[in-house]
Image (cartoon, rainbow over all chains, first blue to last red):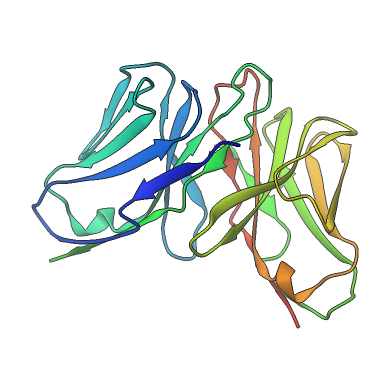
Amino acid sequence: ELKVEQNPLFLSMQEGKNYTIYCNYSTTSDRLYWYRQDPGKSLESLFVLLSNGAVKQEGRLMASLDTKARLSTLHITAAVHDLSATYFCAVDPDPFQGAQKLVFGQGTRLTINP
Amino acid sequence: DVKVTQSSRYLVKRTGEKVFLECVQDMDHENMFWYRQDPGLGLRLIYFSYDVKMKEKGDIPEGYSVSREKKERFSLILESASTNQTSMYLCASSSNPGVEKLFFGSGTQLSVL
């Protein structure tokens, strides 16, 4: 059974600092997704990582995937308050079986203080 | 933009009631999903459907059923609601092939009293 674990689960940081959220998963997969959720809102897709070594960047967020280590990271550069949200990673355990049956991590609640 | 619409934002039901949660998507997506979200547990897949009238169990199907009579609509049914089904329910859809991201609805917060 695939398990997806994020750490930290809670992160409070100051504006302007850098930090990394880690996503570990327990079985082989080369398909990993990052989502963002604002309080009271739904999930918004950030990145889809489809192969070992994949790196994607959007603004102050950069995601990478190491399938051999079964690890993805979401790096935040020079954080700003608008990035405060809960971030989820999700792994597709069976990427060649049609519909994406994602297994989600617990989520990392990120709070960025002025 | 893809729109996934869930019929209710908040619902309060009594134990033993039959509950219907409705979801409609407007992008002709083949795949539709129902997740529940609980604090500290992330999202867990209840059921999904990859075509009209086709459904498959996810990780936690017990106590739930689904219906997909039309491509754009996917319903989650709680046959006899229980208090442990109090949760946020999220519907999602996606297109094939299976690399595409999921688009989520805004969620239904269900309270079972």
